[in-house]
Length: 359
Image (cartoon, rainbow, N blue to C red; front, side):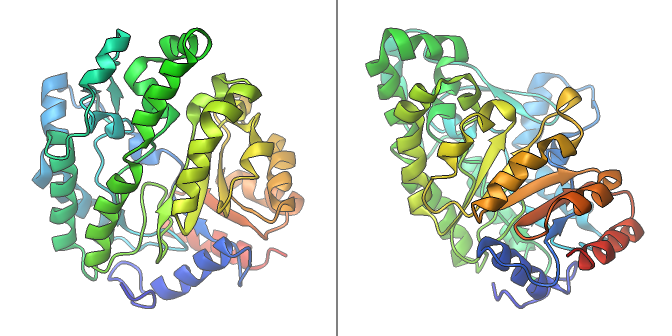
């Protein structure tokens, strides 16, 4: 896709992409990028009353999923750096499902059924490129690509290999015990959960590039190269020593594969490892997920945000509209990529005008 080409829903696509690419380069154009959706907003869904079997069929219904997305963008204009993105989604543990790990489906997400109950069970795990999960993701991708030209972007599914997938195979408690009781087995699980990542990523990336699409996934930040969201939510349960030994080597390999990386820092538990995460090669930005309850409001995390800025890295930050004025007074704009949930286009345009005055 020509980065200067407009979309029906976004005529300023080219200028928005300039802001995104400037952010990745550590630069600031006229204002910081802003996306007008909250983190995880896509996972909020009303209760349909369907049982698990019916929910699963709906998730795998290609026509239903693509048609639902098309209805969601009909007549809508995407302001700021909010892009119309369809990303094929069967849940956050789909990478584990590619190897035969079963998933249970709810309204808005799915969960893995830990399939390595006994250590010998690892022998049954094989990447199945012809299985229902892979075939459905590919069918969703192709169906969306047929509808996409001039209308929206198509992304790739949620891919996070490594230790989070190993935990999906084994379960949190069991894997924690493995780290102490049988670290060789833990590493065997980790190797399985990481060895095919390049091939799996390339399988989807090649299909999107062949259709002229940029690289984009659930975070909604497109780039013309290769985009990845490295993560390790399980790091909240790891000591610095275990993080260094079991997590960092694979994260470094993932990041070196890509032209653009935004690390998903899922809360204060993961942020305990921020100093080491800031040393990852090829990571231009970090998404700060502050959590809820006592982890709100955002202002208590300003020191963490400034720490990332001081390392000349970008940071994706969720704000509530009422937090914006104070945030702008306390934080410098360079390196900031905002995500703000809004209730109207008028509110979005007013926020953009504020951001244009942020110095």
